[in-house]
Length: 115
Image 1 (cartoon, rainbow, N blue to C red):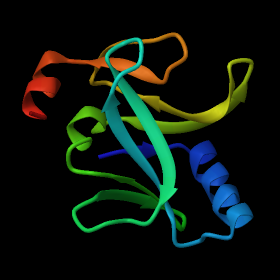
Image 2: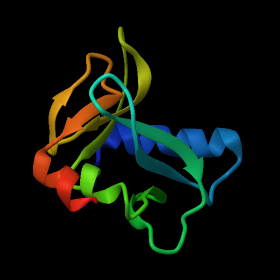
Image 3: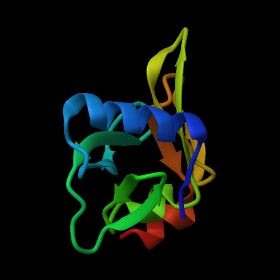
């Protein structure tokens, strides 16, 4: 399960409208790397068979099955502040995050279950 904040929904609606891609979703995936061990990656993409999808007000966030254990339970937000503008992930499965918020260290049980 993922939670989308009002700000994330609004910005994703605007982004899809600006890009002229109303059928796309925000894909969130996790890769090894970053200063904390795992990094969040995001892109506009078509939903695929097997994806977990969470939607609201005409927009969707999708996550592939391999990344889902690392981000399940997270809140997806959008903020525009001194650190920059972008989608932010508030992840209860992260035991440590880097200062920029784009990488994290997963809880041991999360990392083990994803293997």
